[in-house]
Image 1 (cartoon, rainbow, N blue to C red):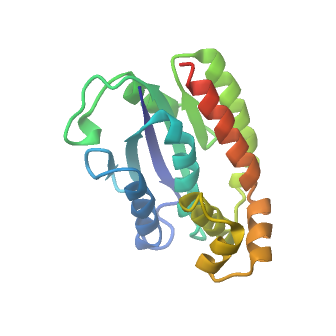
Image 2: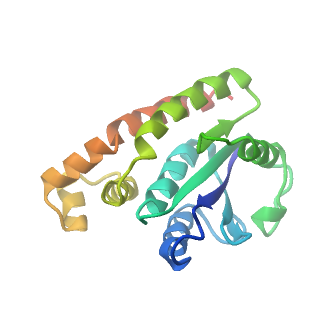
Image 3: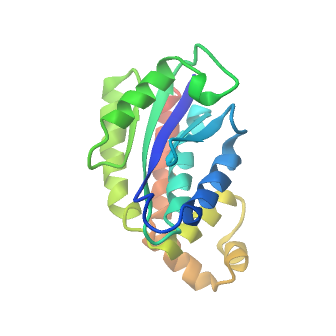
Length: 199
């Protein structure tokens, strides 16, 4: 089973492309190689394939990366399923995971992060939880987004060390992670991982 993330940048035409493109590439490189595991296409759309257990944090990581800008945000659909054809380019690979990801992406309306597997009950529970998480993540300031991004990239580091990386005080890092709902996101991710292990 694989997870396929399909996404695009909200407000991609505001400001300069370079404002967000570097952030996006940096996060995608964290999860795999271009173009076999990720690609940016049509200017502001992207696709990433990775292991299902890492997919939710990857989606949140992408959001944290993009929300470091002032104007941009991201829409993301996660499809969970089989990969029946692996091509040299991810955009030419195929299988249920790709189809579910595409369908999920097409159905995104106001909710900017959603998930689809072959299990409708699981989809319902996870999407309800994701919609609640978006109440926080959609409102991240660029400072909070940057702090969350660095915390996700350094899971073994304590707040003191993260503060050093960001050149900030530990109290301001602690405050930013609290405002960003970091602990709750990690709890949501643990729940997600236990649920998809049964798929």
